[in-house]
Amino acid sequence: MSKRRRFSDEFKHEAVALTRQPGSTITQVARDIGVTAGLLGRWRRELISNKSKALAGSGVPRDQEMLVLKRELARVNKERVGSTGQRNASLSLSAGVMKPNVFLGR
Image 1 (tube, rainbow, N blue to C red):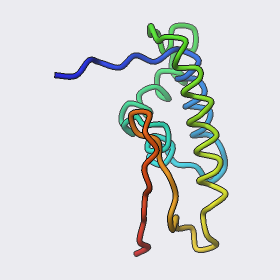
Image 2 (image 1 turned 90 degrees about the vertical axis):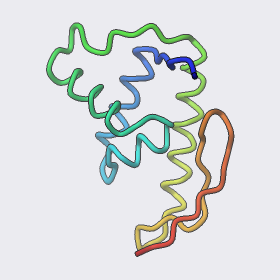
Image 3 (image 1 turned 180 degrees about the horizontal axis):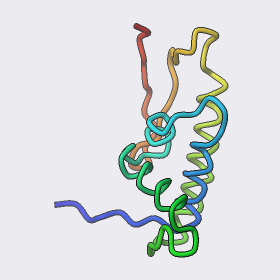
Image 4 (image 1 turned 60 degrees about the vertical axis):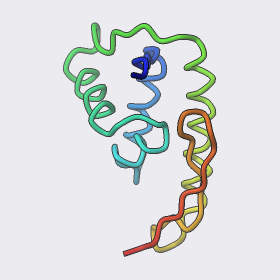
């Protein structure tokens, strides 16, 4: 059984901010930063509905570094998107390991 991951408030706020960028979707951002779309959607709803008490968590400072790296990866992936809107060969960060992703357009 794996341990439950914890994320800092800053990580959650930055992740939600990424979903508000033009052309971004919750699903794509969630995939890029390594969380589920449902979890990211919940963070977004909590932030919108109750800003003062939203996103209470107990993440560790390591999350800040991971957020910076994941944000940079998301930016690079976005730059690599072809004119058709499909990713040909890009990288994703999953559990701290870079893995190639190959998406075939349909």
